[in-house]
Image 1 (cartoon, rainbow over the protein chains, first blue to last red):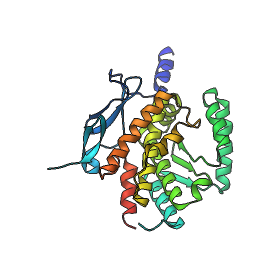
Image 2 (tube, rainbow over the protein chains, first blue to last red):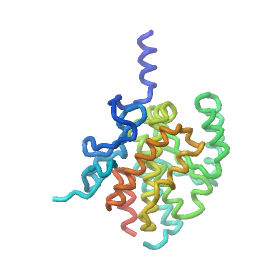
Image 3 (cartoon, each protein chain N blue to C red):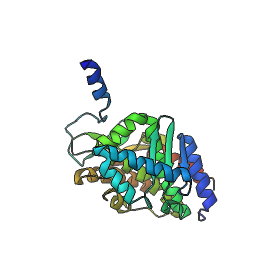
Image 4 (cartoon, rainbow over the protein chains, first blue to last red):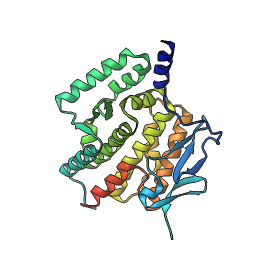
Length: 72
Length: 200
């Protein structure tokens, strides 16, 4: 019974990404997608697609991660 | 691009909704009035939702909401959202991004994430605002400012602490930078909006 309750509790938890130790506010490209570091030091993805899906590639310029047009 | 007509805005909204198993309900629809009353009543039953419910009631006239359900999403548009075709289209894109999140996570997890984690709520709202801003950009050609979204995100509606608002700002600014570079933000709804609007 306790296991069932534990399973129910776990299944009712928000699914946060793992703590990575990143610097809050930092931005990075992970798997060709822009990510922003949260205060809890988790990488939160910006968007739901990789940059390749919009014809670009993820780049970091002046600390900002975003999708830029891919060049040959 | 020519100004969007109300019929075009409605067709655009219906198209996006059809891609994400969402049903759009106009504010004048009796079902919308009833649904809002039920949501507010249910929300008051849970202390965790009480504050959100209070704000929902306060801002019913100007806040549109998306309700994840086991069979899809129900989008209740506010009267102000349908008062102008461009605002209608921007709001539809915003709310359909929430429907897309429900499709991705499942309805139960979507609710748990949104209600249980301000961090995940901030990220979800930032993506949704980016969809709306991108539609405005496509219709006007004017690159939006992050401040347009941040004013709403920082309002009492979303109950976000300053650190979560900063996370949302980072996400919105990333999306705006993608727009400035000539690409849609990496969001499925933004890509779908671009495809539909480019046919006008």
